[in-house]
Image (cartoon, rainbow, N blue to C red):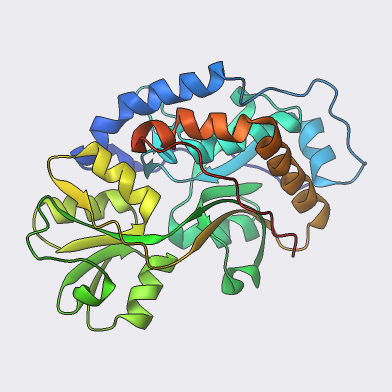
Length: 301
């Protein structure tokens, strides 16, 4: 069994901009709603083949999951409880519950875009559920279950869109912010090189940079930007023109096929029994105002 280790929440969120503050109370209500919906029911009769990751985690009665701490609706740190809340978090609770592990035995570790693979490879986490796009480069070093959601890269601008940015071609000559190690950043670097790319470790810093005029736009997945806009409706708006497909997967150790199959089975069951949609409605859906979409098709590659 990989040894899971509790890590203190990183200090970045303690100094994150006010853009996230407006979402924190909503996130807390969403977490309560998700719990009320029974999205994190704990299996009392879970049993697994000896020697599997599932059996080891079940016996330990604990799991460590990496997620984002700065993304309203998906993974946002609650300043009161010091725990993350959102759709990704609820997916983690669903999986833990199927392992017979209650919510209070989940150790949440902040994973930013740049360290997700290394945290999995080093055994610092058992799973990463962190708006984590499945792609071939990442599959060289980690495995993925899912996808459990499909997003698309979009652009956030200042309210009123004073520079008239309607899509990625309009980013030429503009200063655009994204996060180091993310697929949106790589897409801009590779396919839109005439844009000036400013990179931070978390998206809250990009939001702050847009507020203070340091950058002209922020680009990442549309659902992440929707959460940031919800936190500052007077300051930001979404261009609303997605230009990529971003299938979100759950990262785990390379070659652990039984664990990957278990997570995929759990996701498919949540699609069928409504717990996936309930989790969406209580978190990302509550922030965005969007009803739960049709679940994606699991890729059992």
